[in-house]
Length: 171
Image (cartoon, rainbow, N blue to C red; front, side, top):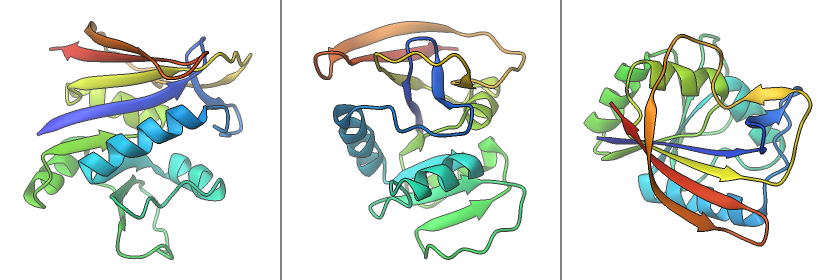
């Protein structure tokens, strides 16, 4: 199974403001994000990312299985395409593979990103760099002990000010 991480970030590496607001990305970033998630058929994210994006009207994404990682018991008022789970990253990938998915699509936040990369479970990373700077915010990876090298596969200009970087994780 191929595992993709996809993030829109500020030029200083934040995926959201300190309060969780991530409404700084461009229309082109959102289109590319949803195209990739639709192709994968699933989106893996943490509870905070899911709740914040739900408030903004982005999730649950109707054309994908929304897998929300959380240790809290939450009422599922969103329907059958939303799954709340406390499974480990490895177990989530095994579940998706068992369901017939060949690509897993990770959409944050920083803690979820770190939990997958720390276990060497991410194959490729898409980073859409937006022309924005936050003094404080949520970083793309939560602080943890890991280090990886990346191989640049492609750069793409999404619009006049937004660049997409596509990397392979060297394992």
